[in-house]
Image: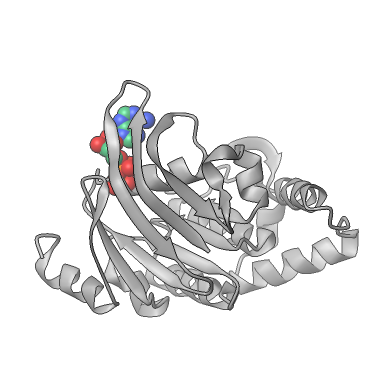
Length: 244
Ligand SMILES: Nc1ncnc2c1ncn2[C@@H]1O[C@H](COP(=O)(O)OP(=O)(O)O)[C@@H](O)[C@H]1O
Ligand SMILES: [Mg+2]
């Protein structure tokens, strides 16, 4: 369903960050990507999403048989790719719910699906907010405006619940979460999983993986996948560090 082959990507100044990365993801799978700071984990997510600050110099990214790298950022999103940012942006003055309404409307329009009625959208919002145990006042607040680190992460999963992507890269969604929030977010991710949806959890900690269990764990070091394995690999990293 999703396949990265020999991907190389650089910054605008030519510094190479991704150096021959391979990754294959099937439908309904949970993968985890772990790796030291600066290895290129966030760069990988941003390159796939189409961030203009990075240049793909070689390799391919195939998503449902299409070359993702030829699509615009919004086409990538509309074809079912979602990124939960490590550092979600705050946009003052843009209401959280207003933003989600615009996002889902744009997606439906691009896919020639009927626009959600006011009631359908309200129900969708209500069930997503209940799943993430978010108080309804977060609907009215500015997008991530003044949200704590943990609230921003929870809000990323709320966006995922509304947009229902086929593939989500969640970049350090567990960082900054207290233990209760971690459980709620992991439970949210688990609830959103189905046979058609795949998730990549980028994380440093085994903690999240105790709740949202990956079938595949990859270690990203210096711009490529150095090792892949099952969930036992995360335990090994926890015990012996990335040197393992
Ligand atoms: N926009 C950028 N400008 C300068 N350096 C960058 C930029 N994006 C990434 N890098 C550098 O690329 C490397 C990989 O970063 P990143 O993908 O954020 O690592 P990770 O998420 O694995 O911690 C780091 O050395 C980082 O400083
Ligand atoms: Mg990162």
